[in-house]
Length: 254
Image (cartoon, rainbow, N blue to C red; front, side, top):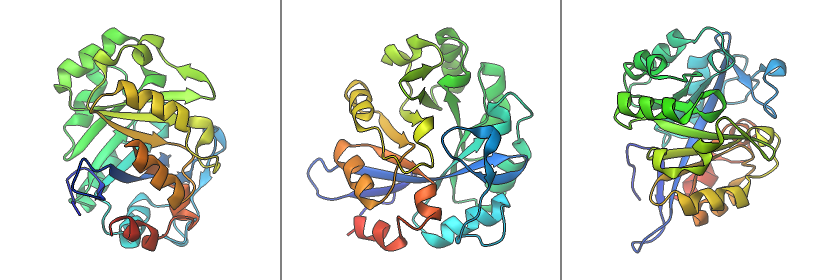
């Protein structure tokens, strides 16, 4: 058993063991946590979760996630207002960072150039996430990497079979940072299962980079499949719905 600084880490043997990082997700819209379904952001509704009954306040929801499983030490924050080109919710990110000093934050707020990421990178324990969906060019990705000295995550975004963003970002691994997110928006919140073929293809090209599946994780069996692929997972719906339990996560550590 290893608890590294980068999420819930599972090692199942001492010999070149697969590693599983399970990272909970919150989606923010107008300062509240919403339930993401299928990438249809205009119709996302406030989250209703037994982990934080009667509230969609980000602090309460994050507290509920940590109470549910204390092994979580990374949190993915999707600032949907920023991703859609509106005002970025820096204040909520700072609130979360202050309230949960043991959490490392992965934050996608629609940052698309070197100037955008500067203020986000100054927030304690925060790693900027650059989504291909909002990225203008490979050249801009290179400038971001230079500004942050490679300390960011890249989300390779799909809707169905459509790659969102500059195609060269998907095709040239030389500009990929150490953490990659394989995001399939139409699978988010729909219990469709992770896109295993796509994950396998990215994993083969990613060398020793961390690869995180986003969208479609249904249950503990999906997490076991991802572990065998050597991938981690971003999860939300399966936690709020109870289809992955604290006992399931604990069992992965045994």
